[in-house]
Length: 253
Image (cartoon, rainbow, N blue to C red; front, side, top):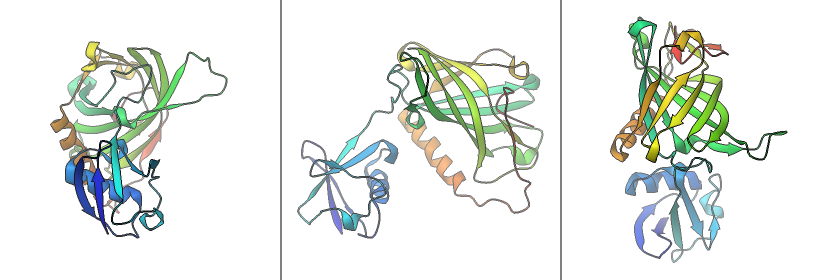
C-alpha cells in the first residue's frame, strides 16, 4: 500500500510503499530512511490519533486518500535539563593511558520515571551509556561495543548523577573484557554543547573528562555504525560476559 506522509500543515513530505501486514514501527523506519530523522523521535498520526508502534497497518483506518501526519519530537527528554539535547561523545582514559574507551550518550534514550517515596522536586530518569574500547591490551576487544543501563537524578538544571545497574554487549562479544557498571556525575556546560564527566571510585580517579555534542551529520554516522555493529552475529566461541556491579568505571579488563 502507498502511504502519503505529510507535515501537520498538510505539506507533502513523501510517499512510502509498505505492506499492510507490517507494523507502524516498520513504516516509521522506512520514512526516516527516506527523509532522514530518527524513528524513536518520530510520531505518526491518522485522523488526529497517534499510532502505537506495535499496531499493524491493516488495523489502521487508512484509505488511499488518507494522509499520515509525521511529527518529530525534540531529543531533550529531561524537563529539568532542556539543554541536554543530542548525541554526546568523549574518550575516557584509564590506567595511565593504556586503556582508552569511547563514551557516547544520546539524550533521546533518556526518559523520566516516577520513583516511590521520592521528593516532588526530584527528577528521576533512566537511560543508556554506550561504550567502545579504542585502545586495549586485548586486540580483539578494540571496537567491541557495550551498553550500560543507568538511572539517576537531575540535581539541578546543569547537574545529573548516574548509577549503572546493568550492562550488555551490542553485537559481537570479545574475550578479555568485563563490562563494569559506573557511578558518575555529569555537569552540562552553558548552551548544552558539552558535559564534564567525573567518575566516582579509585579506579577512575584520573580527573574529569569532557564529552562534546556531535553535529547532526556526526550523530547520524554514529547511529549508522551502531546499527551495523548491532547486526553482527555473536561469535560462538566467546565466553559469557562478566557483569560487575560497582563504581569502578566503564569497560575495563
